[in-house]
Image (cartoon, rainbow, N blue to C red; front, side, top):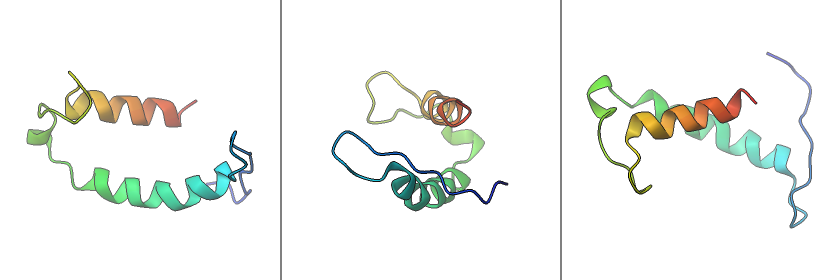
Length: 63
């Protein structure tokens, strides 16, 4: 894993890299709790299952 610090500014002046450093570990902990049996469950996102949402998050991380 890279030790470089990601830095970019969001539209409202917030440091996006700092935000990611806070969110990613928490998101990883939440994802680690998902069981295979949970993948078909609905989410607050209209018509998205847990699988759909995870695919979206993980796919976005690869960009």
